[in-house]
View 1: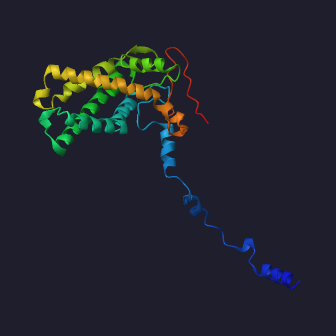
View 2: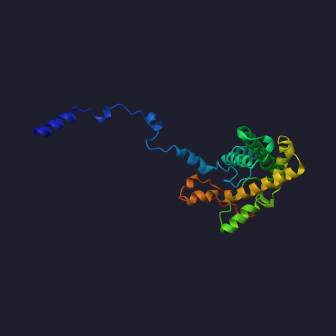
View 3: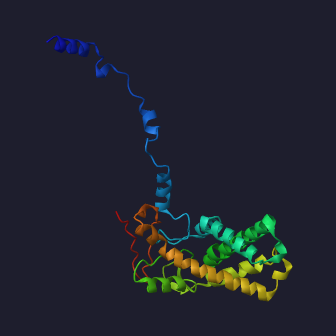
Length: 254
């Protein structure tokens, strides 16, 4: 009995909930959760658009000239571009290609810089200038149907076939001529021995080959992450329904 009365008296002495000061709501809203993963925000961004491959189409609507120019800039500084140039410069130095650049870090830096410059020129001519003049859509539309053979064949064909701004199939003149213009411009800063017609066309063939191979990786880029059950990281890629077919946006897997 005494214990019961003591507990009742203590309860009466405690302040009522309504008498407590209001909690600082704004601070609580802005405060990060204890177990919040800092990668979540990055995952959400990647879910809306691919940062690694900015040219993956996420919207069937055509791009205007300004958007094509912005895409060319994004491609020039994308992680895929930086990684490709870094690896290419290392392989080139190991094979002693472009010997006029020398060895060591200085030679590596020159090879890396020339690779980035040539790629930026390629994106400018292919993604922006020629695509705008010829009304081509410079983005890559994943097919997302058929077996591996069909998808790889489709990806390789995108080097010579592309979509127009109105959704039809046409010759990919920007993809064919863009690398040639970029390598011709590269003769203004490459070593003198590289400025011959033969070496220019050799670099052109090398660039077209790399661009073609990279399209296969683009085709499977969304599938790679979905197979790992982290679909939010995969770009919301817009599948290519083929010419004269209605666009069917890719539904995310829950």
